[in-house]
Image (cartoon, rainbow, N blue to C red; front, side, top):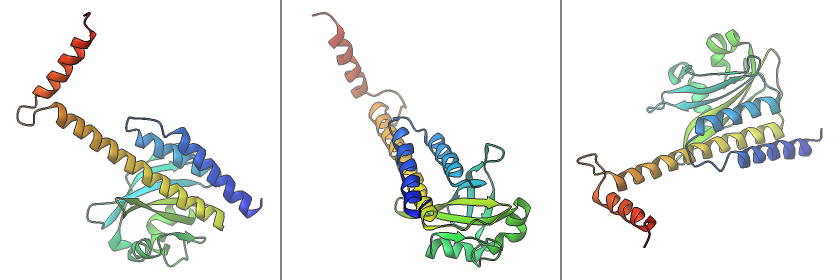
Length: 213
């Protein structure tokens, strides 16, 4: 496949996925992210795709969602400390995109060799940044096991777009949370935790409007 055709095909698939999951008013961010990760894994024909977020101190990253294609399941909870992988964390904050065709020899990822790459048979990694409130907050990690993957520009661009899409999902989730909080504050008295006078007035006029004149 021509590189441009591949690029357009990957980007189009992501656009269609975004349209498919953009109309919900409830916070279904977990489902959206899992759907995006599974689609990414299938389209790139890779072994594992995951989302990692920094802890509050940014001294580690914790896996929030990990899709494993061979087992068709999600996992989570793995934590990687900056103190054990300083070069990787430095790269996340500088070069941002990490395209390690050979993750076991690449200077940015070889720190993972004993504790992560070798036990899981990971040979190649492609990582792209996730942002929240304009700041780097995590990373999308695409991994190939058993054989090396030589990432081309279409795949790298797609990985960045997927990471941006996940950043938007988190932004929407925050917006919905703030919207719900405002609605709660408009309805409930903060001192008594009971519905306030304004809420009762609105409900009264709603009922009044339904009564026959």
